[in-house]
Length: 118
Image 1 (cartoon, rainbow, N blue to C red):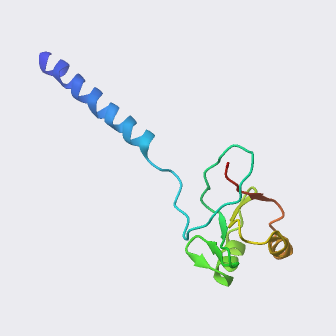
Image 2: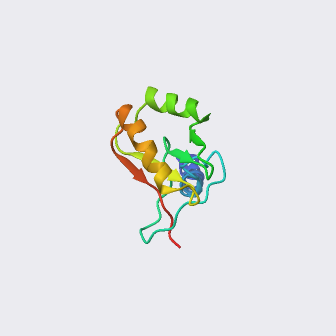
Image 3: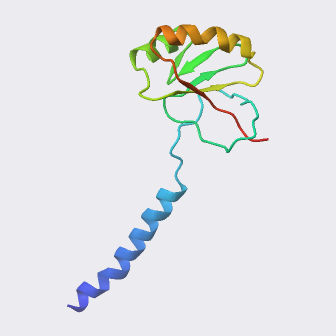
């Protein structure tokens, strides 16, 4: 019986380490390229998996695919909810507006533009 009680502190330590590592782990993957997000006055949100990234020169990244391959991968696995889009701040809004009909043709009519706080 005394030996059973000796294991309880070890279980507590293991549980605390597990909680510590779960709390400090990053749950979102890093962007595939360095992208400067536009600035807004809304709360900061981490990009989610399944985010469409747009570089300053208009390169599209979705998962590990780039440009046309990214659009093909996106059409093959459309999101269940709104599509998160993280565009570089230097990317013109008019170019983003030209991309919307192409996304709508794939059945993606709801996007969420990701911004950062100043």
